Image (tube, rainbow, N blue to C red; front, side, top):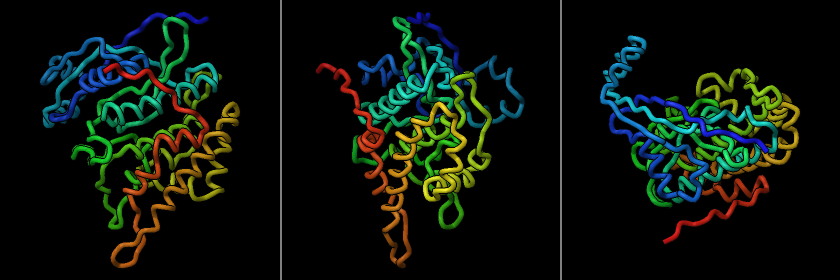
Length: 318
């Protein structure tokens, strides 16, 4: 049995005015989802500074100017120290931590009404439970999160700002609209669920569990600009040869995961996108039905596709 000690880290963040700070989100999640507390990073202590002196003086001059121009606040917090998923010991541990992250993300949205909005390899983390050494999945860095309305209502207006990390963003949040401009649309739960899929594909190509290293990017266009990344993702779903050649780059230990999870999920997302492209506008041209996509891509369907039964978490006592 592996024994571990509780380790902490000091995290700093320059937060834009008007944006809810990460410690506030973490306190809210801890209160609403206390029965899942061991799967959320905890802010042991935190403090906010209006201009962050003397920390500001440690930064590059151009960065200082940007921070002062935007009137950003410095927030530092002491949190649990987490490890990247590629430092896990086995594919089985990776799968377990990944499911932890998918489930905690779902409950954060549906039960606590918080949408993360920045799923990436640097935010999907792990930590070993001190009592028995079991690896637990964590979703870290809630800096770009937003509060959302109850199910069925639109997210707050702040969610219309495109946020996320390029390789993992949903296609609809990256690709230009018909006029070649950046799309302005709500960042929704279905987009984050798609990000979790792209994280999974990315992981089997880059997370070397044997050496506990993250390999350099194997698909250059995927890590390019947002338009190129969106085009690659669309080709991955629609073009069987692109999908085959990409997954041939997967590390050998993940072969079973590719067959059991990635290929069925790719079909699920492809089918959903095709179903949502049957609507036509007033001129008769096909348009993508974003409302239908939100209904097609659900937590329940995602879990059913990979053959994993959602856990029955201990509910909060009334």
